[in-house]
Image (cartoon, rainbow over all chains, first blue to last red):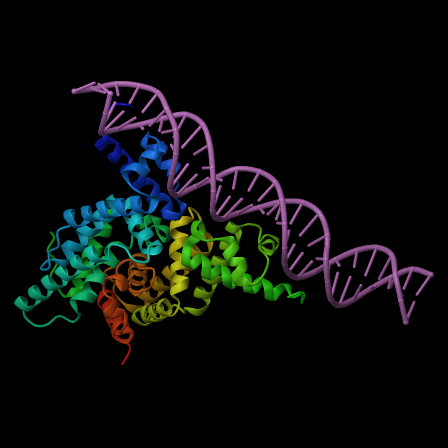
Length: 194
Length: 194
DNA sequence: GTAAGCTAACTAACAAGTTAGACAGCTCCT
DNA sequence: AGGAGCTGTCTAACTTGTTAGTTAGCTTAC
């Protein structure tokens, strides 16, 4: 492993760290386990990333960025957006857990990034609503949180979904359309899917 | 403190443990801190409760039981139930965090207790639906999780609510009626409140 | 020969769990 | 009455294993 390829090693560390933090959180994660899983020496973690905390922050930011990149927001098709969030949450249970840990363990984290994304979505919803006729029943801010809560209620990080009714989580197709339907019922939008 | 009052000491430990676990989770909690906050010796924790894990389990069960005791389920008034869950979640941020930690850190925890409560609610909803006319659009299991997700989306443990839009969390009355309205929209039930 | 990439071995602090025993109040024997 | 002995409650100090972070130096490519 003396083949000096720092970038590849960094990537391996980040991947291993992602798994470890996702499974155990910051306090429960073990730096030695990350190094072993990455197949490198522990000291490299401290050379490339300064500390356990910094490593977690890096992992979190990298993965949050993926969320914002991969999840297109469509203010004029909120049920479809909910369905996409649902698919993402089901496909990436590790990332969901990571975000949950971050919310519980970090007092202040990622505030800037997330607030920007939130504001952009709210503005887009306001614009879509204004173009669309009468004011909807709910404020955009409320709707956004409600949609996210619904779409992620069956993800690995939720206390309600998979743990209470594992039967439903086994039928993601049904679940996806039901979530979209529920969002349509709240927003008053017509269902767009087939 | 030589006043031999074991019950009071146990209660103090449980209270301190609740705060500590709620703030830091299992892995992040420190037994010494709990003992200090409870104003007693660390060894008493191990005499009264066998280990850190057992102490957490005890705290969790005690508090979960409170949830089931204090939150009446009304299958024929689901918006009202959602509003009550919301109030509870806002009044007990520590308990919400505790449940979130438990979900993330414990592979298997409280399964029996929670499954029983879940089944009872589902049955009650089926009975209410059968008495009420045509089959609703959503299965009771789905509705239950959806309601809980909505009602707790602004609680301290949620990654979406308070962290993204602190403005809304500051107006709990508005939030409560909006949540109840959203649940009414999903369930097709009439709003019961004024 | 030198520098980037890496490792083995180490350290200092910390944290869960344990031990040995102090101290107060009680009972029971005489 | 009064002390021996027991029991329940509690404490200070210790042990033992673990953990984040460091140091000193090896190896390979150019």
